[in-house]
Image (cartoon, rainbow over all chains, first blue to last red):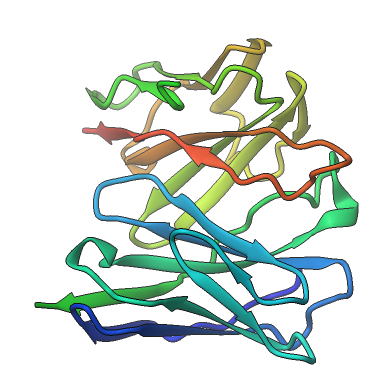
Length: 115
Length: 117
């Protein structure tokens, strides 16, 4: 499985933007980049995903490097509710229905948000 | 939609007892996943069902663990006999994955916290 590398932890101040980096130098052409987050005492929740172009949704933005070897999850205005572990995961779209089309979680980045 | 529903939320059992964890996926979803989370090992995928059929159970720790999905609206994860090292939070997730949209997000339940004493 293609692997991702994320910082163990980051800190942010409330109402400031947060840029969470992810390196994936061995990404293949059919790997999508997915982000999930896990709030304290909850199950993970989907945040966003993309392939090549930058993506925006109501939760966050995903900026993907031109060579796709890295990406950044952007929270435009952090709130205390955004304190969570953020996971960057690669999924092989061609492996649909097969044993390799599954989410494999790494250790993620623990984001602390200060008031 | 009520989301993915897991029961019980907490389970405390004695070593050697049988434990059954239950999951009701989101209606219409065709894929179901069981994960286990511990401080030491993080989130581990145990088994993955697609259209009620087990596709990959390579993450199931050993023969003491078994999972079933008798229909599209129900799955169980059973541990028999249970051991203290099985103590963890067990999550169930479901998704609607198709050839046209293979990247559909997973929806996770709130988990079952299992303590084996």
